[in-house]
Image (cartoon, rainbow, N blue to C red):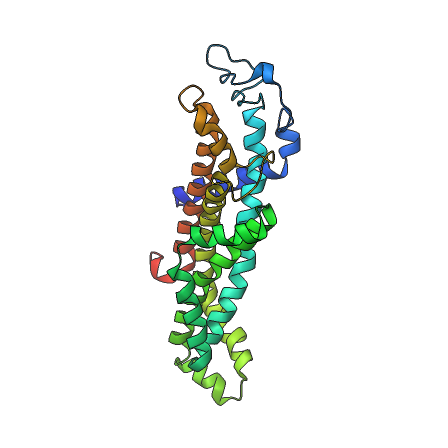
Length: 275
């Protein structure tokens, strides 16, 4: 708790989770309701604004605050599910490749190298073009693009651990390969995996926003932060609030998750703990 940045980051993340879970209660308006007569109203503290729409309205008269609140559900859900799907696959393949080495290691790492050779956004465009843009397909795209990081990390840890004395002792006592992998190796690699997975959530939120901004992610009228940025860019000179508030939501959420990741790294790595 002495790490102020970690406490601040944890508070931001918890606030986002509460807002996402309570979105139907907290949102003052339906995020899909349109009222063209109230289009491009400024925030409440500017001339022409009102308390009914605290953060103003967009080009269709929809309430910005309500759309930002509901957009948090999309970003957090896609970010978490993408990591939940990609992390176990990557860690499992990495442990197997690092422990058994040989052909399995070569095949796994060559697949990873080929995937890393392609820019993610090109891979995402290709998959979205085949499957079509939707929240489910965005999660699939991000999961397919994210497993490589965890696989390479787990493989490196496994290569280092497989020659340690306690692993040799487990083999000498008759321990099977999978028992050694999941009973002795996995607990020793879980700490860095948790830290990298935390940073991965922040990265997936950014990538989801990028895909939605490009029109390859969550489709209108479903509110998403990236989609709101795309909608507001044509009005940025006359209605700055259309892009400022969803952009601030992305920045604060990613910053908070990164603070938590730094805090977990300090907490879980004994080499970084003060004596």
